[in-house]
Amino acid sequence: MIRVLAFVFTLFLLPFTTMASDAQELYLTLRSKVLAVKDYTADVRVLIDVSYMQIPTLEGILYYKAPDKVKMVRKDGISMLPKKNISLTLGSLIPSGGVTVLDAGTATIKGHNLRILKVIPDDDKTGIVLTRIWVDEAALLAYRTETTTRDEGTVVLDLEYGSYARYALPDKVSITMDVKEYKLPKGATMDYSEAPGTPKKPVAAGGKNEKGRIDITYLSYKVNKGLSDSIFADKDK
Amino acid sequence: MIRLLLIELYKIFRRPRTYISFGVVTATSLIFQLAMKAGGREFFEFGMQDISEQFNIQGNIINGYLVAYLILQSLLIQIPLLVALVAGDALAGEANGGTLRLILTRPVSRTRLVMIKFMASSIYTIMLIVWLAVMALFLSLLVFGDGDMINLKSETFILLLKHDVMWRYACAFGFACLAMTTIASLSMLLSAFADNSIGPIIATMGIVVVFTILSNLELPLFTAINPYLFTSHMVGWKGFFDADVPYRAIGKSAMVLFLYTSGFLAATILYFNKKDITS
Image (cartoon, rainbow over all chains, first blue to last red):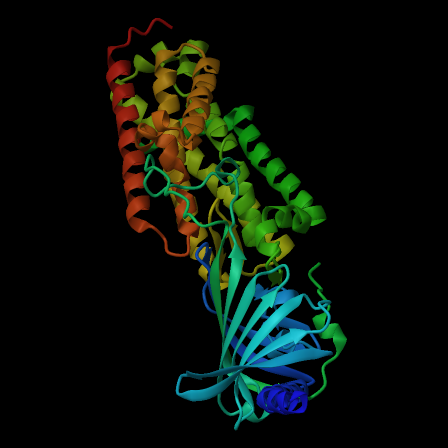
């Protein structure tokens, strides 16, 4: 009787262990494809949409070197990118090292049938607690990642691919992330009020964080040409 | 008219005190530029803490445009004092020197005399603003170079592309001329009441300081009167550094300042025409 029960139990669990194994394999294959890009230089157009920021579209050159070096340079201009820990590269949002991968079903995004993987890093040194990845199995491309970090909230990357899909490099990345509120004393800034005497707008309820969105359009890439570390040194500091 | 104006300008620029203003603007600009050169990045990052925590900002942040903006901001209170130094002396100085009665014995109407003194004070004011532009903007650009400009407002972070900044400064300095002309007209009015120039200068500063405090206090009692204070509109030059320039609001502020200037000038003429000149 016990042997029968064990057999039935094994039969019941087998599909799940196979699925987990498939998910793990899919994740590792995807990760190796993403990590095959050691460096790139890209002409980019960055649009930052945060409620308290008024920034025009910034055009510049984006340098990336694995595993996590990113720098945007604008000739004689100021560049702004999210900080390192919520980096905009797929490579840094896919956990490295040992991971546990779980199959979390399927979904359709923009006409692509995608498999959802839940990736839990074995250690949390990177600050990543959990990553969900929406993967096109056939093309081996991640179309969306949702990364929950320990200190910096959740970062969602929506990716669109074009001619550099073979490197898993997107043509466009939309980053949705938590941004903290910004405030300086009015006595220090002495703002000009467009309507003096108008009562201040009430502060929105729901805490001090809000969502910000950054769209990065990649106009062209130069992949794996070799980049010097000196490019990433902050010469302005 | 031109000859009388030239005489008034000669009187203004013959006095050593006139050059104190240009000296103060020069010294303040140089001190500020030196300080920004030494530790500007640290100073500015303190203000940008909330942004820097989340964004990596790179490039020539402490550039001439930003330094000029900070200098203008710091001189908001001082420039009216420098304008009052001359405009407050226009009529009261003559009374104090005992030359007012002598001037009025000449075939010049009192109205014309007030208008000429106001025009001379306005020309001095414009020259001071032009000097401010040279010291604060052009010298800063020379020392720090150009680049995109960051403007930190109390609840907004603004980034202006470098090719989009210079015209804003031209408009801002133009607006500053209008705002400071309002101060000149106020000083002239107070000058008409007094027989020595110290009183109008101090009174002008007192009014500017009190009104500026009222303009910046967001208490319900004061917000009701804020739209009617000229100090609320004097900072209209800052509107040119918004990403989308609020032209309508700036135009309204310019109109308020123009009305104040006209009102002060009319009151000066009215009072001065009826004043019993005893000195």
